[in-house]
Length: 261
Length: 248
Image (cartoon, rainbow over the protein chains, first blue to last red):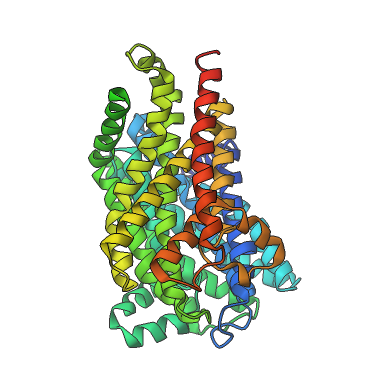
């Protein structure tokens, strides 16, 4: 029985990953957006960012964009999950001899694989930018991306059943994008956020959300792997805790919601 | 004229009905103003970068709403709404002109609260400036909606028009003076930015809001360029619509 569930999980993941390749137009658009952030915004800001915060902004931004790319593609699984629920296709999936948690984890793993596939070229580009070609470092970065994408696809499928209209899902998604992008260290270093927070206490919220934002934490870890900045043990622990919590809550919310429909 | 006004009022009421979308978009813009803007300004050495950036954020908002309005035409064509309009006493020419103007009106109306906030944050609040900015916003947004309508009418494949839309948005925003002045750009980015209409409107608004020395493109170049784009956009949209849909 356990073997059947494992096979079902693999089949769900395989189906979702294959579906990802059908969205080549969407993917091209997103690649352009992320690439332009990296090579246009990164390169131009590189000349005007105070070296006190980061000596080479282009190098600082590249891992952030890689983590962001992993997030966007992993999170995209949520849109299809929302469509499945809105159109009732989800009822068909639930009528199959597959457990609800198998369905949830199949989707989470598929989202993660999408994230890894999509972000790999960005990761390669990041390694080229910082001139690092070390197999172990690439592996460490890939493990970090794997954890980010697991957390973000869980978040994607958790939000999907909560909305009744695709337009609401899209609006909610764009708001969440902004929170993930700007409440953390994708675009600016932690010491800059702290400095702003010292002048205005409200900005401690940005700092605190950044501390539990898996994408921001993941970007910091990739930066440390590439010797762009340093992290401490707490950064790794908080990354693991926040990611595992997101995965757990995400899968539970998804299963509870589809069961209640 | 009555038909054009009817289409514009229908689009306006459609926008007002999408309350959730409106609120989300405003919150996203506020995050850019109060979170990204404040923190990125801290690390940028450029003097008064925050005020410089605020004008850019306003243009981005207008740009997106105008493009969405233009894109709405593509959606209506995809959903078969054009056939429905065919059955009404509205010509396709009127429909397209109304849709372009509607893009301008929606963007202008939608951007008013953010404009007020930006003027307050920049200490540049003045009724005259508001009138000038809203007039320019309307002209620019009308052009952008028109451009998207032209693309939508030229390219039948939704996939290809989606990608062109994506490329256009990305390049027009990133290769412009929305985020940075041309003085800090490498030369290979500088030239596209100088001929980019998004740079023209951004720098013209910077001139009005922040005054001398805040722009890369002088107002005497930016203003005629925006007027020219608006006229070209309306003319081409009408000609293409007549040829494509009316079969003339």
